[in-house]
Image 1: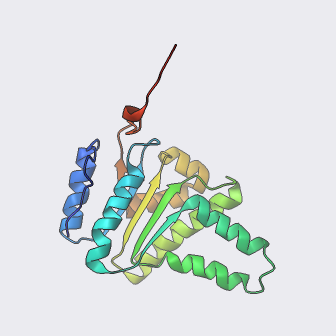
Image 2: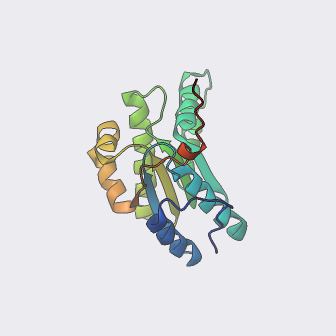
Length: 186
C-alpha cells in the first residue's frame, strides 16, 4: 500500500510522515497516538492514512469523533429504550474492529468525570481486546492533550496502557491554518 498525500500537503512533521509511510507501505500493524496543538495536521494525517488503506483492503474503518461518541452514549442512557445495555455493547464492539480512528480525545462534551470514565473505559477495552486476542489491528487516536493532561482526564492506568500500545507521535506546534490568515487593518 502507498500513502497517498493530497496535492499541497505541507510536510510539517517529516519524521512522523516518514515513519507512518514505512508502516503503510509494508502493510504493518500500527497503533498511533497523535499529540499536538490545534491545526497541526493530526486529523488530516489520520484521514490520509484512512484513504490510503481503505481502498486496498476493503475493510471497514471505524472513524469516530470523541464528542459525538459521548453524545451517542448520553442519548442511549437518557432514552426510554428498553435495551440500553445492548446499545452500549454496540459501542464497545466498535473498539474490537480491525481499524479504529478516535479523533479529538479530550473533547467530550460535557467534559465531566463520567465522560472521561466512559471514553477511558473504551480505550482500555481496545487495549484489552488487542492483548487478549493477539489481534493485529490498527488504531489512531488524536488529541490536543499532552501526557499529563491525559493522566488528569482519564487516569494513569489508561495512559500507562496507551504508552505500551501506541507509538506516540508529537506533532510540531505550527497550525497549517496560520498561513491562510488574512488580516486587514485600517
